[in-house]
Length: 327
Image 1 (cartoon, rainbow, N blue to C red):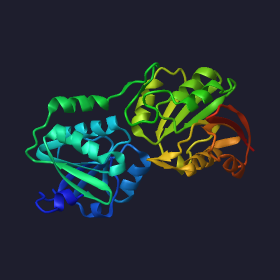
Image 2: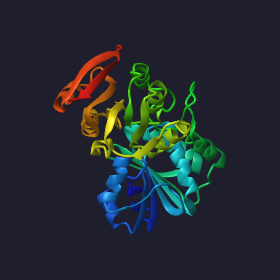
Image 3: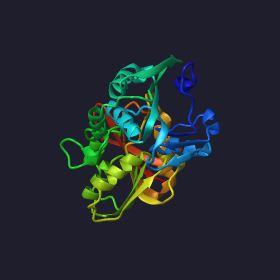
Image 4: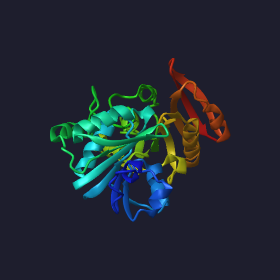
């Protein structure tokens, strides 16, 4: 990433910098004043374990703002606009991303906003940097900033944000699970990988015996959307910025979940297994687990390994529903 600054003719690396979408790297340990913003809990924790300073929300002004790509076009463009808001006069924005993430297209978009870039390519990645005398297109940046704002999920009363899972529609797997949740669920419930709160809302609406719901979600932005979506709940709702793979801090009568199985573009079956392990650790004996998953994901063995009795409770051509109970 730093080739665009350190290479021939580059301006050099300033003492202070902010990284949006922060991910640790050994070279950052020698950087006097680099600060990171990362809404995804596992990466935020990794940044802090590397001994680097982190902000819960980006603020202030910097001579250099580094940007790692978001998970969607709207999110990445919104992060470019955020970087510009945090830039000192004469400062630079440096972005880096793999070619498979559309680096060439994003470089062209970014060049439109700042009037031209310095660019390098290496290791199937591309880094591009604005110039100190950039002529910023304020109107275009304003459009990009709007792409990152909280917005209504079409056809619903919920809100979400670009870059979140299922930000522009209700996930069909979650919808299927919500439709088949037993109305008799009672007590304290945990929603693992809660996203912007759809399953928690369904649980509260369908199950009058539920006393409280705790949402566990790794993306801080999704959790803030969930706060809005569940603000009118008539029962206590807890919001926890938490990596479910680390286990649960509380004990519950029931767990609902649609566990993730992607990290970036990689399929990660181990994520679902980690969620099942967390559910097993957080449920009281006899507690119930309500799970939806893509049919091809082999979670049944993990349920056996963690002392669940379970049954397939329906599904469709794409998804399976599993109801399980902790022995």
